[in-house]
Image (tube, rainbow, N blue to C red; front, side, top):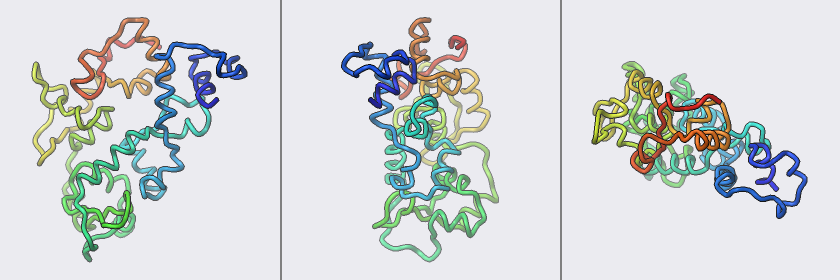
Length: 270
């Protein structure tokens, strides 16, 4: 019944079908697939503190900087779905933290939790989390026996020193997340083999650094499938139907870049 109501909210079935038995409703599977995926992997924002080992301000900061994104294409659905994030994206975020940050058995005296760092340094949580995701906090680590963001330890002095020398832009990994790419496969946008890179960057340790201008240049020309609802102002199902009817296709094989990339000039008006 939850799927039936969501399909009705998204216009895949008629509103009158809300009262019909689910076994009497027929539609193309491809039209239902986006809604099915949302239901299978949706995580309510209210449960993110539990899953991420985070406080509510930390969750709000992650949403603010785009590390996690709301399922914005389902505003008309039930409150559970309209206030949810992609569970696969959440799991990938936790995995990145686990892989990137070394684990320590004991907390050094100079290291504090994220909440304590924000309090001591009078720094916004979103700023600290952005620095962490950009790989700028080289001393950051995870305390054994703790889970999620509650396990993350940072050095307030390192944060203070990095804030004294701000660098506009962000790491390649964070840029990929914000633009809607799979970070593990999307790195080819920085080194396109057949032409100039889709996103200009410069070396930055094991990653690359993306300037605000490079990010904006990409946004002016292209958009990934994940960001189409924000750019076109419509729900995912309506967008898929419109693109299919107009014959608009990604400009490259999605498997090449970890996301379907569309040229903005090709997108039809909603």
